Structures are given as structure tokens and as C-alpha cells.
Image 1 (cartoon, one colour):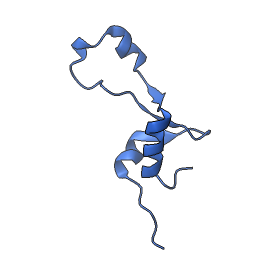
Image 2 (cartoon, rainbow, N blue to C red; image 1 turned 135 degrees about the vertical axis):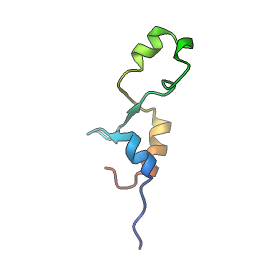
Image 3 (cartoon, one colour; image 1 turned 180 degrees about the vertical axis):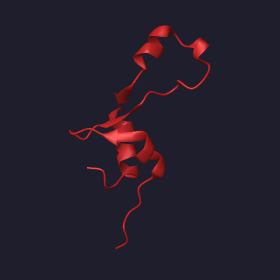
Length: 66
């Protein structure tokens, strides 16, 4: 059987934690930030754990991530 391929975009944007959860950056922080509340921008710093539905999609893109 040929090897399965990892999506390069997912490889660059997401990491798995030791418990198998998917960690990624918060969305909506590239432009139009004057419209966003200061609270939203502050809470979106750093990385966050993806929801179960989104994590399932990302894990399908990275078949060899444990």
C-alpha cells in the first residue's frame, strides 16, 4: 500500500497535545481589528484547543500524527 499523505497546510497550522487534542491559533485576527472588542482580541492571543468536530477534520488531514 502507498503511504497516506499529510496535508501541508494542516501540518503548518496545527499541533497535537500529549493527550491527543488539537491545538491551533485563533481565527479572525488578520484584519478589521478595529471592529473587534478588546476582550475578544485579548482572549484570542496564543493558541487554543479546537472543538471536537474541528479536531476530527484536522486529524483526518494528518494521518500519522499520534
